[in-house]
Amino acid sequence: YNEVLIKDPILLNHSPEFIFDPVLFSPISNTPIINYQCSDQDGDSLVYRLVDSEDNKDVPVAYIAGFSGLLPLGTGIPVSLDSKDGLLSFSSTTSTDAGVVAIEVDEYRNGIKIGTIRRDVNLRILNQTINIADISPLVGDGGLISNDTLLLIDEPFHADVYVTRIHRPAE
Image (cartoon, rainbow, N blue to C red; front, side, top):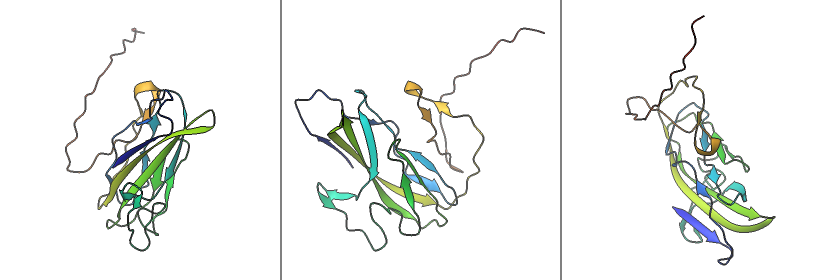
């Protein structure tokens, strides 16, 4: 579910866009950092926040006890979203955890709110542990660091790899 609110249709504005596809799974016993960062073509200020998910426009989901927009994985799993950069983190110890993470991004120009976008993601914790490899971060478009790639055991992974040969003179 995605939603866009435009405050002033006359204002020349490009809505922010989420840079990465949503992450739908996370391994158990890990403290992932999931990147929900947006880019804004106009250079507007962006503020990220967790909100209640919606069934329909302005109709919140009926959460079961212990779950909410601020606790999308339940009371036992605190979720943190950095309001400045859109990085979401949490820690889970059971594979029964699942929930809907709803993120709103408010867009400000000269201190005035001019728009909002939102993304709802069904996030599930997998009963797998993952040893994180020591790999340098990937630098994507605009120099942004991409650290949202998650490799799962027994799941195919495809990527284009470009290698540059560095010629070192003989000593």
